[in-house]
Length: 51
Image (cartoon, rainbow, N blue to C red; front, side):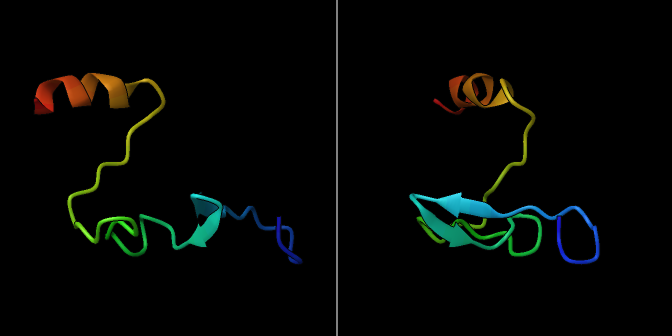
């Protein structure tokens, strides 16, 4: 929570703070614009279909 009692989220990649993927939809690791926001457990199933 911030100083005004609003809920905040901080995103990290490899120990380094990165912008929210919702605000800047570009992968900070590879610069790709192909990003998916998924609930937990869905990532493994999506990777099976990409092969």
